[in-house]
Image (cartoon, rainbow, N blue to C red; front, side, top):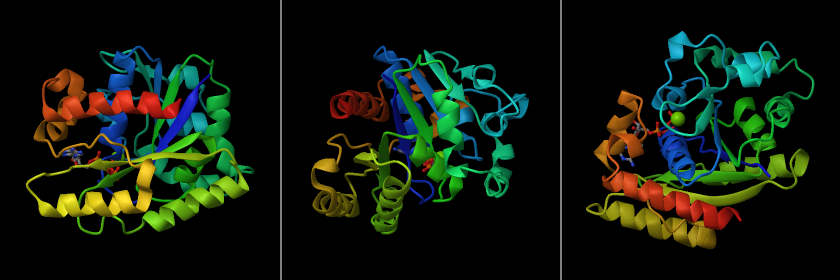
Length: 254
Ligand code: ATP
Ligand code: MG
């Protein structure tokens, strides 16, 4: 059985792509067959996993509009048992084009349903918005994972995010579940980080992942080499955190 997880926060730069790349890497290392779907026109996950965006012949954009077949567009990430449905800036026009498509919320779901069922987990990296691309991710997902950056205003926008999740649940995907909230870029020298952690714990309780992702420069530099943190510096704090996150993910998703 394939479990599909949308990684979503409409706030930009909170660690969605970093989480998708490195969680997928450690789940793959743990023996799971992984598919990463990049539904963000920025394509950060695509390049972060070592794919050359300008050189792509076809992307998720072509697959969504039935102009290419998913298995042909799917790529292997450089050094892991990990498949990627890549994206680039082509996808930026998709939301406008989608508006005139019947059942436009289900375009990604249809793509994933028609794949050979060969993956244990599908992780979807969403853009920083609650538009049709993110709604497509939510409609196709069993679970939502919400990275939250340990910073001032961290909780701002979260009630809007949860309300969109509720709307999608009510209208198109009744089984959609919030798997949890992950605190990212945590800095233990900064009392603000601790304060944000306490507030999130109050708000989300059991939904908070125990594993906290620290602010770690190795995590920030890895994508510029097209490497996951497991390849870039597996002994770094960031690597150890994402490895622990993968184990906690396995326990929680059961
Ligand atoms: P967007 O909303 O634009 O898609 P995002 O939510 O996907 O952004 P990332 O791209 O993962 O966020 O992270 C934003 C920036 O912060 C990137 O430069 C990334 O390398 C850096 N970063 C992410 N996580 C960490 C971390 N734990 N420590 C240090 N830097 C990090
Ligand atoms: Mg991103």
